[in-house]
Image (cartoon, rainbow, N blue to C red):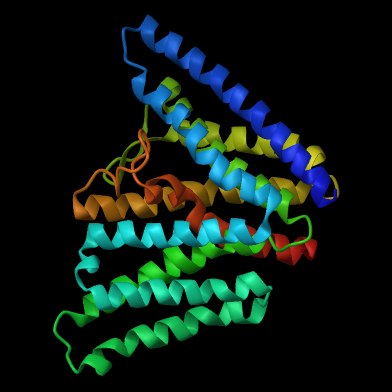
Length: 305
């Protein structure tokens, strides 16, 4: 499928998916009301997508460079939220270095330089380790360096694989496929957990995540991935699609738990409050961060993208 065809399919599929989610939410609202429960949070989460989708979807379809800039800004925002939660933001010099290094990591993406994209993090870590030496001090620097390395690599470089994925042949289709599966994994996991959840998955880290929600969201992602294959990726084998869907399921849950344990350790509920019903941007894209690089390299290895 060429990019113009993929763009049309993406726009059409988005309308269909949002309508399907709307129907699911409507059923959930009616079920909640029948039990005398409030469904306000469910409706708020769904309505927030109408604000979140256009800034991501339109650049994806119409401009590769603009889409990559959007993901860069998302990385910077995630680093900012992480820094404010951990206290790293108080050191303005280290914060600005984290931002500059993150932008530098993205530069090879804009020009399609794979070697530079893979080696950039090495230079970033090296420069961050030199900060205490350049300052001639060591007090509290180990904590700052470790936090800044985590910020640049995890929230910067890991997430940047989503931006590089757009450079692939059929990049629109692959990127959209990944985003849809991650969103469905999160959203359906939440809905299945609300409806059927009885057993906590890891209660000390994520009190609201249930075994039933995780299992049924995995089945749902697998079904959705297979349904999307002939529409978005007709040249991709069924087994690869199944593998990609399962990776999204497992790594999506793990990525969510990674940010959850950080929040539990910091004794905070959300990383931010920018998105009603979702928390901060980091709370919204936590499942994508760990999934994007594995999805990226799996596609590159098996499909020669």
